[in-house]
Image (cartoon, rainbow, N blue to C red; front, side):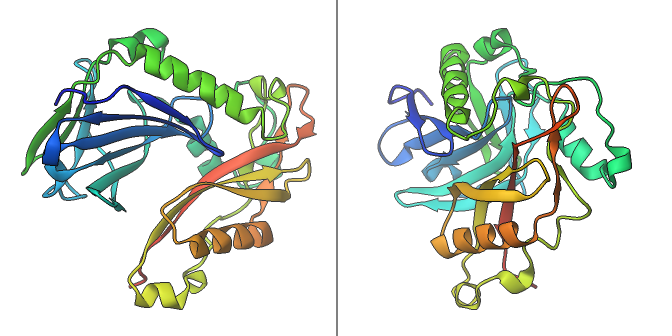
Length: 279
């Protein structure tokens, strides 16, 4: 499918969104990437009639000729006239190592968390040259076919996205330069499973069959205590947003970030909560 609009970059309050339309008429497709901080990760949304019979358990995506066709975890969403919508909550242009997830899973006690070599919390592993070489995005269903969006080179759009996310973090009240050389990011203390529980699911929304995906950011002080909660993106209803922030500020237990000298500093912790109908 050929593009039917220019790229649009939205400087939202908690995220940067890079969007474009493809196709014409009833077959028009909305495509966007959304990023919540500098780095390689983003969420993806594709929406429109060509995806009507795609099953969320049967979706693969490919970025450019050199990219691998890989399976993704997909959530179904409703974007009004652009429906159905498929949302991939965490992806990259290529496979990269994710030290944040690895550290969060293995961290148990302060004794396990001695400072290591400085690293850039907002580092980027995928090069601008690789981004520039990506000229299409393909979304495929084994049973329902393949939709190819002819994006053209993603070099300039992703460059604009990086500037947007750099500008974004300057509003968060953290020391940006210190986060270019942390020896430890904010980590989960113990287990995060009890932070938001099934019992927190609003009963009226269960009765209505409503589910929600909420991306959040916590500001975390030098003692590991969350001091504020911001919803960066949500499928709504807003009651989900309120419950997530209330429970996280009450229950989240975290281990503070360390700067290059190994001193605790104020930092951020980002994550997502998915409210799904309990069995």
